[in-house]
Length: 391
Image 1 (cartoon, helix red, strand yellow):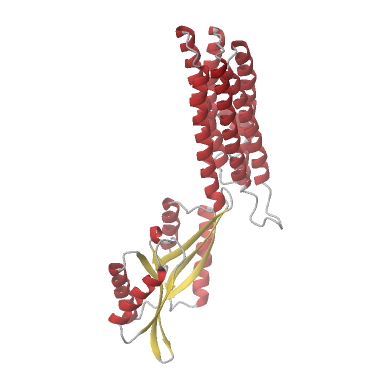
Image 2 (cartoon, rainbow, N blue to C red):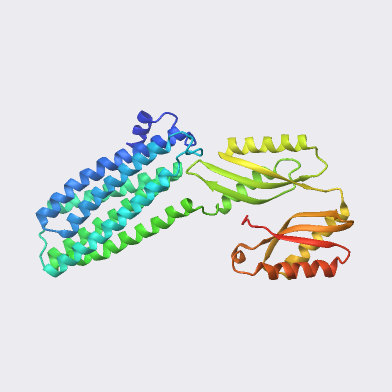
């Protein structure tokens, strides 16, 4: 069914890196979710009123909020397609994250409303009616919700969409909600126990938890989360395969929405290469990374004197010395030996391990490192700096 819709509404559906193709996936999912959730709202509202079930009625309005969430998704996908402009030179891709945040708050609001209705049902001690035909219609609605959930989950992975992931989680929780409600109504019919309100409290707790979890997942890219290890390794391996790239450090990644990633990195190159040769090399790498990975990359050049064996030996010794004696240090970068005021001076930056980045006194690290250099290389001055990047 969905594959047929893909062929009808989306040209080149495999080209998910194309913003227009990606947006059409999101729009198609949103239209399907809006239609099905509104149908489920009507069906469950009627069933809830006939059976006098507060939990089913609340679940109906939960489906109505899902339609509203999908409308928000639809608007977000349309806005995210807007090209960069003077006020937003990096595009409008973060509209999707904002829509995910709105959906998350809607989920929490529904959960809180659901708890209130459930408590009222318990206190009122109102019994719930039962009807086999309506019960089986509820069962069918469960499978519809599961299909919506897995559809959104599949497409969210395909186009890397946080908002569709939020919608999929919400839909699967809704399927769980309706399942528990159906079981509680069935059990109440055979035992004369009024479980409707208690089932509502349990399920609404899951709704609120999922909303809070989705808020956290959505805030991370908005605030600027660290790139995944797979992303870092993939990017670095694609750069290091080029000749004359000796090493990489100081990677910084900025995410401005799906398929809108900017990054900068320091690349170590032989110091004997001409500026023109280095520029040609870096320009080639930047274009290749943008073409293959869709990342707008800026490379900073760090010249390394690979022909000065004495300098290289000192660098290796100091790196081993510091990492061996100062546990918090992860690496040293931007190593230089320059003649200043008639005396050789060792320059380098210290990269701390991520877990110690804001938890240690760097002045103590600096003093310990300086003491090590002075003790082992008394003929050199040294100037050590803190490196403020994580990768």
